[in-house]
Length: 270
Image (spheres, rainbow, N blue to C red):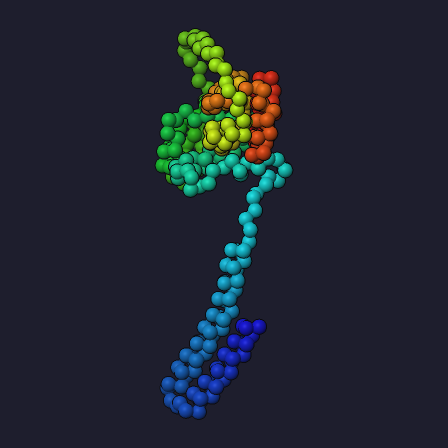
């Protein structure tokens, strides 16, 4: 309504200005004055229509509530575990994007593959490009791959099979220490104080590299399967004893994960 009134008012002013110029001005100045009047009239109409719409669009965006994105298949919401961009460094955030691209690239040929960086600083590779080595799991013919990132953000991969000249033998794993008697704990309190920070970072990293689950053992080790072996990725201090596992499963599920207590540990998937 306001724009219609402004349009009618501007048209009236235009007609009055044109009549005044035609009646009072003669010679070479007349066409230029008429052109200037029409130009001002056009700009006034543009401002009357464009500015209110821009203001309304901004107001609607401010009033629109933010919605949490849910997975299309109805599974657990992994976005709740992804840290906000301003809470991590730019290099770490870039590396996660590169990890996802590498996972998609490898899975196009090997759907069940998972992998692990063997570079000490893969963030530098993601930032400046180059070639870095990863170890791959779930592929019978290969155990390593060289990933090349060029300046145009293209990814190429060379699959490798590394065979040692001689086996040096495997040293026996260190014997586990007997745990001391623990005081009763609340799994919810333990998770908020000690477990959340470690699990959030671990799940985010593993998810970017193609993993979909891990196992929490009674000694606090968080392990994943790499090929035929189970490898410890993190250690959780003060991990609750088995008597608290059912309650801990509920705590994990209330925070967006799928958890199941098994005889060997708690299986956590996302």
